[in-house]
Amino acid sequence: MLRMGKLTDYGIVLMSYLAQKTELQHSAHTLADAVRVPQPTVKKVLKSLSSAGLLKSERGATGGYSLSRRANAISIAEIITAIEGPIALTECVSDQSHCEQENHCSIQTNWTRINDAVFHALDEVKLSDMLVPSTVAVSPIHFYPLTSKVDLKTLKDGELNG
Image 1 (cartoon, rainbow, N blue to C red):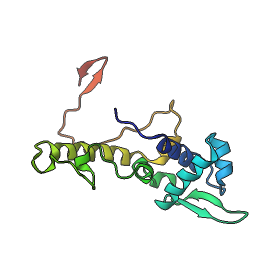
Image 2: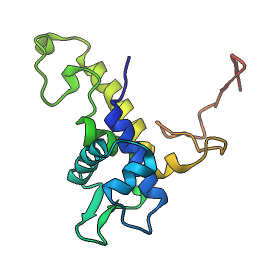
Image 3: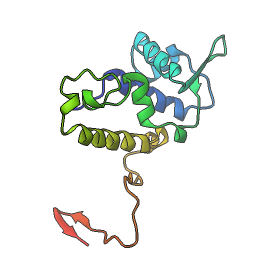
Image 4: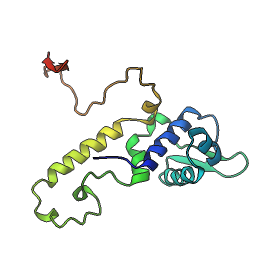
């Protein structure tokens, strides 16, 4: 099972909250209360997000945290990478691979293609997309450009139509 860690989930929740409240600086304490996550956990996540350049932080009485860029310019892949490290589904696509099979593995290229597809899908989803209520239709993620020569088919009720 592929699964993000809780810290990454909290990071996306915190970033989404900040994206909704861009007019203010937010303290770690205020953020912890707002998203109902323990303050030590919030501080750890904020540190990772700040180190990755996704948040600005200012000290002082009027200081706090805010997004470093607009929400539509921050991808979910960036948030995940800030907390989890580079997205790598298998060890062989990791920058620090220690796989003994790597030199003679016949499927490594395919794992790279799969990893790239997952990364690009997550990179297409922007923080601003996370603010859209689930009842609102959201534009689909496009992995490949569509051409007019392609006969589009749709899957409806388990049957191919088009």
